[in-house]
Amino acid sequence: MLVNSIKIGFKKGIETTWMLAKVIIPVYFVITFLQYTPVINWIADIFRPVMAIFNLPGEAAIILVLGNILNLYAAVGAINAIQLTTLEITVIAMMLSFSHSLLIETAVSKKLGISVTKVVLIRIGLAIASGVVIGRIGAIL
Image 1 (cartoon, rainbow, N blue to C red):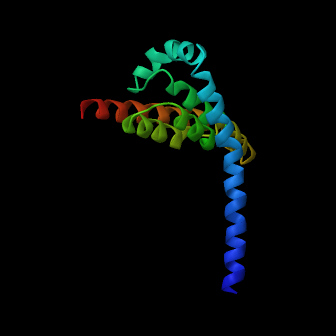
Image 2 (tube, rainbow, N blue to C red; image 1 turned 45 degrees about the vertical axis):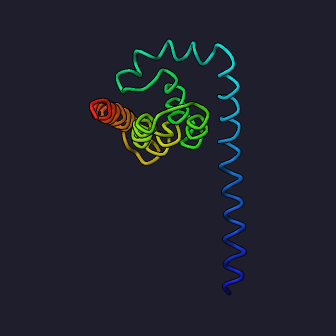
């Protein structure tokens, strides 16, 4: 019984690791590759003023877009590829805890009969509010 449970658990662990690796590793490599091109700097320059509201560098926009459009695992791959401080990672994590996987979770809300507009506005509003508050508190400390 114990041996069988260990085998099943090991198999499930390998399957989960493979599923996560299929998202995280390609995103990590693409972002790392883009850092050696002007693309990351262009994105950073464009989004620097908006990201400054959250005390984040312009590059953080990439992580937020990936986390909101795809999923948290894509954001994790991008976080690993971009040099960020602990505070910056905390701000991003808090923001994405409210607004991750918007496309999928909005579709689920629609199926449940919940107002899509309200769900999206609440989730994005909470993400923005938490980013501002935590980013500002972190800047003070």
